[in-house]
Each structure stands twice: as structure tokens, then as C-alpha cells.
Length: 145
Image (cartoon, rainbow, N blue to C red):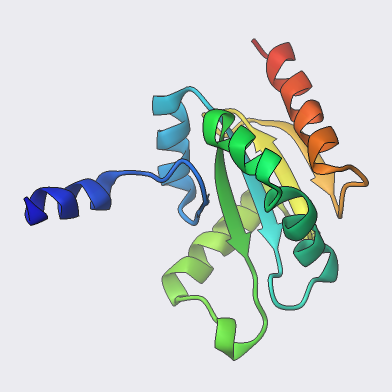
């Protein structure tokens, strides 16, 4: 039984919370028929990034919405050694930035199809409440169906 639980834990993708692996996120989005929300963040140095997470992404209403409609991916670029990423994760984040954030904007949030096609971008901290952000995402999702 413990082995079964361990295997299920290893291969299941959490619906809530932020994934770190974009390829796994694309697979989950395809399997669950969801969009991907990719956020480029500097979690320990970027004030607007921290504010975005606090005011929108950590809001209960956003967490509930994202569970049903989004696969969340966080590409973090911390600066302090204490928050340093593994070399593998840093490489993955650099590759994501090369593909989706060539200008190096922080925060930078992207709504993508399950296949990785960009449908909407937000540069910097959106001047929206969590509810307004959700409505904007819903509007884009409904237009795409």
C-alpha cells in the first residue's frame, strides 16, 4: 500500500500550486483540457512579483479558479544564495525565458494553450484585482473555444 501511494504521488500533478517543469505542465494541461498560466518571477528581489503573488495568485478566489481551469507554472529567478535553484531548474527556467521572456521582464505572466501557444501576456504588475484578473482570463478562454 505504501508503495502504491508513493507511485501515485510521484506521477500525479497537483491541481493547486505551481509546477516548476513546463513540459509536465503542458502534459497536464493537455490531459485535463486546461490552459497554462506561466509566471516569470524574482521571488526574493522583485517587489511587483511578490505583490502579484500576494494580491492575485494567493487570493482564495484565484486558487479556486485555477484548480478547475489552469495549470500554473512558476519560472523563478531568485538572486540570493539562500533561495538558489538547482542547476537543472535554473537551466529549465533559462530555456523558458529564452522562449517566452526574451526581454527579461519581471513579473511577466503568460496565458498559453495546452500546446504552448501564447494567447495573452501581462507585463509587470497588472492593475487588476484577483476577481478582475480571473474575468480577463475567463473572457480569453471563452473566446478561444
